[in-house]
Amino acid sequence: MPNQSLNSPKADILVIDDTPENLNLLSAMLTQQGYKVRSVTKGSTGLRGANAVPPDLILLDINMPEMNGYQVCEHLKANDRTREIPVIFISALDEVLDKVKAFAVGGVDYITKPLQLEEVLARIENHLMIWKLQKQLQVQNERLQQEISDRAKAEEKFAKAFRSSPNPIAIATVSEGRFIDVNPSFLKMSGYCLEEVIGHTASELDLSKDKEALTQTIQLLPNTESLYNLEFEFYTKSLEVKIILLSIELIDLAGVQCALLIANDITERKRLENEFISLVSHELRTPLTSTMGALDLLATGQLGTLTEQGQKILRIATTNTERLIRLVNDILDLERMKFGKIFMRKVKCNAAEVLTIATEEMQAMADKLQVKLIVHPLAIELWADPDRLVQTLTNLLSNAIKFSKPGDTVWISATLTEHNSIELGDEHSLTKDTLLPNCLFTIQDQGRGIPKDKLQMIFERFQQVDASDSRNKGGTGLGLAICRNIIQQHDGKISVESILGQGSTFYVLLPLTTS
Image (tube, rainbow, N blue to C red):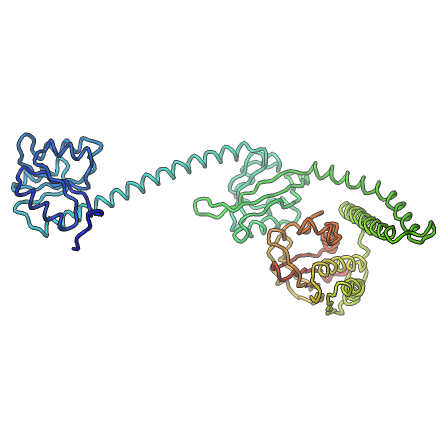
């Protein structure tokens, strides 16, 4: 073996032997092999040295004056500071009883004299390795015990928060969406008892209008890891409808992927919000109509000629008033749809004609923004409200054009699909089993795209990808919510997939059913 430098010895070895010749021999031999060696001739001196600076290993003679090796070893093992140090006895005594007693008082090995160099070194290295592994195991065990203790405390803390939380909380498996635990607040909100919930899925309990929506959302978690503030219609056991905001986190329970669902009951808040929106919207229409009329009158010049600065201010006022009127009309439209006050006037109409009308309406906007429109119509008969379909498609086209750059292309097409093979990554995905033929409208752009965390909420009211869009693009944040409502009233589905920086594709799927 190569010699070790004095600054980094292989190990610190204490040799206790009353024979100077043995000490010199062992010291020279071990030093040459790279060990640090401390040599003493008395047991009491060895004990003091071991206690002051514990060595990595002790070589101990048995026959010594004042205190023999057995007594020294017993003292070492009785001291917490030196108890774990491996002790190898070195003695000329070779009787079995001598060796048995050496092991009984705590020795780990016994070497008889005269010493063989290779044997001594081999046993020292083996016991140093064993001791090192034992220390590592002890450290790992202590760390593991600490982790177990910390985890137990965390689980206890979580259990207390879980049980006492005023928010309804549930835990379900990701694979099947089956509930494995719910807190008292969840039971209170749902009206079910614990036994009725555990082991069942949201679909089996009819907890939402779209029976599979919650289960499908849970199964998205391995990709998304968390979903926040998803709005759901929640059905209680007594069929009362509650509106909840749901946040879902992916957690691991004993190696099983689970979903932690935290609900916030916003039923009353939504009711007050809807009443307020409806009241304010109606109250705003009359003064807005008067304001718009006054601005139109000013623009005709009948009240006098405006300066260039005055005309600029008038244009700004007119633009913002028109925008406010659109917002009020969108709110009223959405409210009427929501409460069933707008009925779809369904007739036989041609998908190609609907597509052409929507494209023609948006052509001027596309030309102004230097965006190319490409349309691929399909002459197929639909049972639908053509005006509302045109409203939906023009809204989607408007968004695609607004968020495109000059020179970009927007495609709109209609295709016939015999079965549903579209699988998209959000809760509006078109994954329902569809046995009848469907007409699929596709609107694709090359715009900025939609972040993954925004795909979940862009179909909600007043939601936009960027808060500045309402100022820069003139949107109200209601267009997609209105589109979704229209398509849902046609028993269809609307969805989106997007790659940030590359564009978005919106899908509208309509069943080819007749009245």
